[in-house]
Each structure stands twice: as C-alpha cells, then as structure tokens.
Image (cartoon, rainbow, N blue to C red; front, side, top):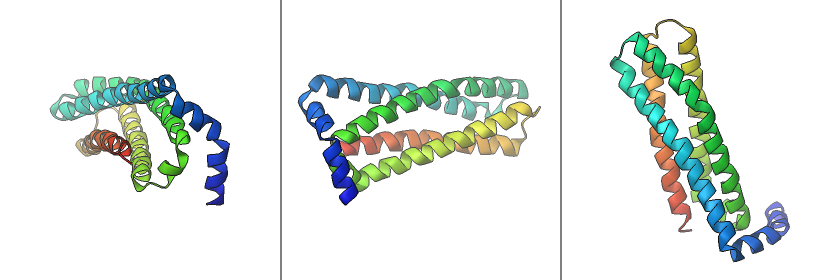
Length: 165
C-alpha cells in the first residue's frame, strides 16, 4: 500500500479543498451527472432507435445507422466529462474509493460499457459501408444496443451505491 499512501499524501491538498468547498462539490457532482445524463441519454435514445428499426425497411435502418453514428461524439463528450469529474471525486477520498469493491465494480461496469460502445460503433460503421444490413448483423447490433441500455443503468446504480460507502 506504499503507492496508495504516497498518492493519498500527494492528493491531500485537493482532498482538503474539496471537503471544505461545497461549491466545488456541487460543480463537480453536477458535471458528473450532466455527463451521464447527456451522454447516457443520447446513447439510450440511440439504443431504442436500433431496437425499433429491427422490423423496419432497409431505408429506415440506413437512416437510423446514420443517426447513431452522428450521436457518437456527444456520447463520448458526456463520458469524458463524467470520467474527469469522477476522477476528481475519487481523488478527494482516494483511500476510501480504491479499496472499495463497489468502486471497482463501477470501474468494471464503465470498462464494459466502453467496450460495448466500441463494438456498437464498429458494427454500425460496417453496416453503413454495406448496402443492406443482413438480419444476422442487425441482430448483433440490437443485442449490443440492449446491453448498452442495461450497462448505463448498472453504472448509475453502482454510482448511487458509492454514495453510501
């Protein structure tokens, strides 16, 4: 734990400032929630569009794929905002968080969410380059969209649990 002790010592000025500044706490928590709401909300809306397009025509699917591709950047911006603010909250009480299985569970959930997002982007990009999406390819796309929805809620649930450690 020597590395952890060194990091905790290094971050003491930040931890002290953060613990005494309700303004800093409010701004950082807002940034975290705004990133999750903005990025997650757009991602969930895109996931829903993917599901609905399962029985749609090729023309509708192509439009949905283009919309999903266009939403990628704002989702990433929301995730980056949530991750940066989350890192600041973690740094304010590093010893508590990095020794918590709940925190590690959230980090694992975020990692799976990011990997699934990359898969969704890859599947969507391949589908955009190919005229007519095969039913099997669309089924993979839909499964990843369903997993995305579940993961967004799991990450939020675990984040709520972190407030009670």
